Length: 319
Image 1 (cartoon, rainbow, N blue to C red):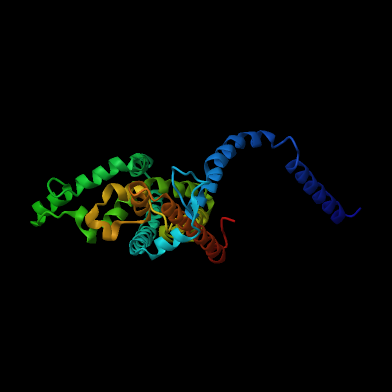
Image 2 (image 1 turned 180 degrees about the horizontal axis):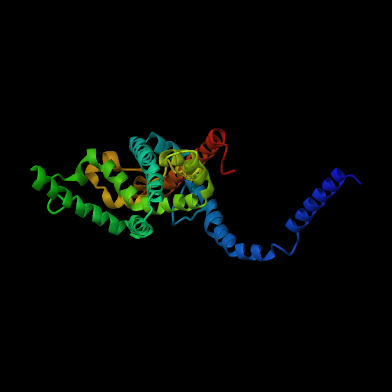
């Protein structure tokens, strides 16, 4: 038997051996048992309630029940599409999310890159800890901090403006021109640290020999970041970007509900707060279900399109 034939035979034996190991019947059973509780919980709380979406196609009444309520088809979809208030909240939702995508998405990437350049380990850990602590604060507390900082009477921003520049106190929370900026900045402040953790973890997985080779070739820190660090973060950036695109028509309820007021409804009222008033305050359960169903459908389409775009541009996608 020739040497080439021996190599081919050995290679085929390794392939068969790997296939047998992969499909051994008892090998993965413990893993399946570990996954079983999570699958059961996911099925009970995520998939079973899906059948309740038929509320959107009925004139639902709690007294009659789900099955006995009158079927109205797409009437609720037509109503909210013709409602001028709905298009206002749709516009606000998209604008705020676009601002968050433009300014909020790159922020943790920049923070992670800056932290990666810090050589003093203790200082790096202190900065990292301080940056992700706000993530663990509830929005009830965080909103209180934001309101206190921007208070016209004793807020630090107005005090600095008055004492250093002689400016009159400004009621930031009631000014439509400031409200969206307050939302974006407070959102970045609260989430930048925890989001940066994902990128820092990815940076640590990059082979240090790549940086050593780049230094030998004369590459400075900026070139190392551009040609080594950022390409090493491409996969995690793609995943998080696709997920954020998928939530373009969804925005956190707690932040806006705790910060906004009737004077800024024009720029701050979004789909989640609109459905809250419609469903909880006005008990229009069918209308809110129709809005939620449409919102989920649009989000799914956005995730699909963003995933296709990422696959075409970056050569990597979620599926």
